[in-house]
Length: 317
Image (tube, rainbow, N blue to C red; front, side, top):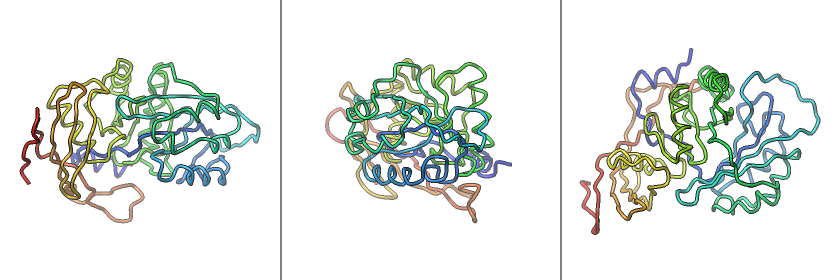
């Protein structure tokens, strides 16, 4: 029984403003089983996992392991094998997705993590002989049951169904945050996350991403922004009817919990001021299947969306 996801769905917990935050994703293929903290509890050398975590800390780079969908026997042949690696920077107007293969994961320690977080792929291409990804958009489906059983019970069937129906670019991923929204999916190159995903919806999302568009249904937000910015940007998209992936940017977020003022800009010069208020999702529910007690997870409620052609409008707070 998928406890936390079922409770979240039944209680109608909103999805916008719940995506993990990262301006750059670094994804390393690691076959076999994963533990709770996959970088140090898989067949990846745990010392390498710890070193990569330390290298990424504070740089804006979020690390995760990926693997092909299917069965994952608990075996380790001990032989070098080619691993797929992806790096994706997702700030609008500067987004890129690069890829490489390597039989020596330790080469990832040669990456300039600060530069990757700032949007420079040069060290990725140099250290790993990488280059731009030219294939279909990617769907990263969270399936790590050791992190939360909802991800395994709901995510693995989704990944398998997508592969069985011929959808390219599908991977399992270790952790996207928000177990209670399982199945959760991260779509690259634009970095929008989706929750409570179904196969037909993911196909629509991938088709749209291939055309440079964003599907709003089921969207948790763009991981480029902090949670108030995610909610604000999605609210502006709905208000303006804007689906082009790189049309909007979050310029700034002012204030502090529970009230934020978020400025969202369009590439055509328009701007919006958005009031976002943090609330609590009630009644209490399991925030994850491993949580000892029910909680009231934070939710991002958009209270006002005001377009401003010149002077900033006054928001009601």
